[in-house]
Length: 119
Image (cartoon, rainbow, N blue to C red):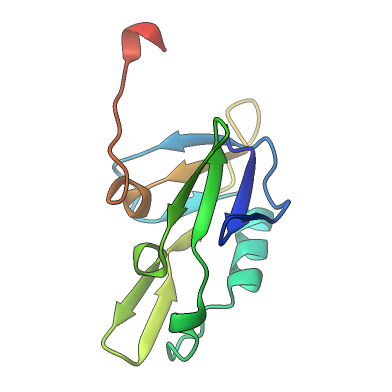
């Protein structure tokens, strides 16, 4: 469960008590359209990379700990002149959703251990 999302370790009140899953088959960070839209607007990643050096660390509070991604983790940069943010809309209806999916950007940064017998 995500307790909140942070920018440079400051809570943003964007996604409080959101459910989350980790998925090796998802190439981006995915979540409900409204939440992803807020993140896109607040991050405001310029496609020409002009604000790349000013982008914040994007963090997720889980179990009271902030798990942060640096801009290089959540922004795809092609050369010095084209940037895309690795966020995509994914609307899963109840009862399985809404849910946030931590894909490759998260998995490349954090080591994950799956303990199925003890869930």
